[in-house]
Length: 185
Image 1 (cartoon, one colour):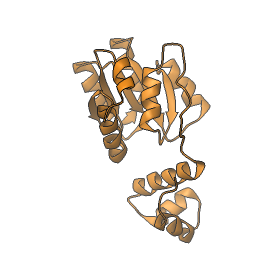
Image 2 (tube, helix red, strand yellow):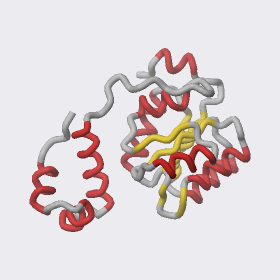
Image 3 (cartoon, helix red, strand yellow):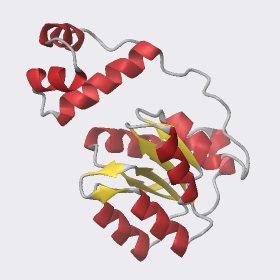
Image 4 (cartoon, one colour):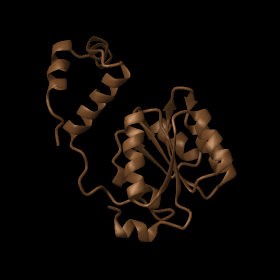
């Protein structure tokens, strides 16, 4: 059910483009943003995102930094050149200060680390210009952020436990125990 307060602050042009190659995340975010009143389009590649931007520049965009076919900042730069007033949030699983600065230089309003909550994304998109979004009421716990990161790497490794353990630099059995447990709150 849409939040009445969110609907009140949405401008008439509520088009939102999500450019993310993480299909489960993009799908969940799309549904959550539609429930908040946005008219959502999803693209899984930089190429498709650029095509969507050129055909109908959105008022809002949520763009993943690293995509299979390139850098999401290319989409940010094109959108800001076509529609300078567009409000863009950059997401990434590989957060560091240098990439955050680069994202802001390209015209991003904010830079959020994955996994970002739909409430945090919506608050950042609708924050007053020059202001910052309020801190989240119920942020994810450190255990939940760790679990989400492990799940993401596991999916990126095609659910291969040995490869995931190698990339996370952890013992395979430790990873198996973590994967067997429920997600922390």
